[in-house]
Image 1: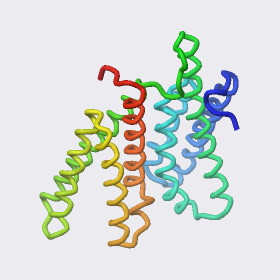
Image 2 (image 1 turned 90 degrees about the horizontal axis):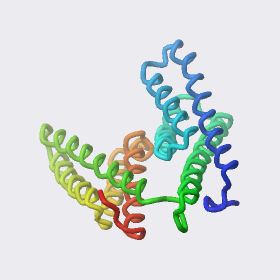
Image 3 (image 1 turned 180 degrees about the vertical axis):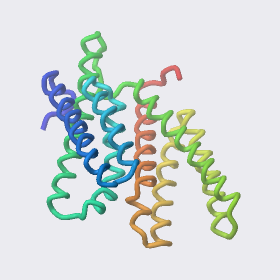
Image 4 (image 1 turned 45 degrees about the vertical axis):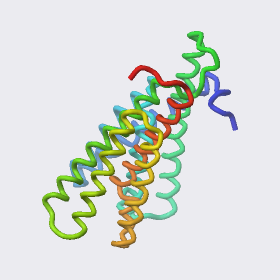
Length: 239
């Protein structure tokens, strides 16, 4: 299989077009579901698909990553709502493959652009997108930590105290991630994983792991870790 460094422009454009068209098709399929009473949130899914699909076709890497992460986080719930079955499983796998190719295509197109501009040894990921991943992960951590702290302060009981401590750790790691601390990005990811496992152990609910919010946050923290690691190995740009 070709690596990103060996993908040519034609192949990269085809990958992007495939992912973008997949997003448009799925967005179009939501209209009948909405008319059948699926709810307003499905329109939000359609809007995200359309916007990210347009971004992918134009070669926007963040749009490709966002759509893949959003889709991964929502697959479990969507699969359950659709009734499960092998056909739905196959369709979901095809969607994820298409969006994964979209990520590969957009990153390959950016690498080719930077190589054409004279960048020596253009890597698959530059420090610009790495800084963006770091900022998104740090900002998401700060917002999530403040939200948990607010809920903990207004609740009562032993577990609310635990959540308050958890929120302080989330805020600490998020702030240090924004500063580009490698250890903080790693601990932010580990803390999220541990919280998901602990929540599952207490409730036995698989949504503690495969629910949209915990899984989406985990994906954001993974991107933050990748971004900080890239900055650390590829040089620290101006923030």
